Length: 75
Image (cartoon, rainbow, N blue to C red):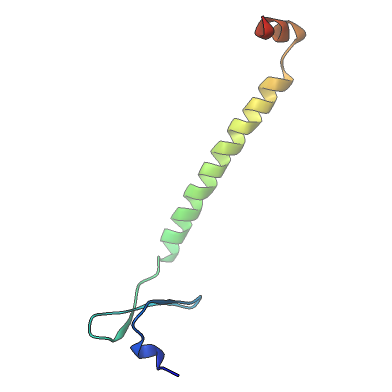
């Protein structure tokens, strides 16, 4: 079994991300910090919120149509 310190490829685990540099020594790549993770989560949630608002607006518009509006759209 080979020693994981001297592997020639990148290994990814839940605990850390490690790469092997040109000298064959293992070094850790820095993970995003807590604030960076929060920032990404906020952007993801804002995008999801915008999508849900757009879908809700479409549903509201469809429910608020009157029979006159439907006949105008079909003509």
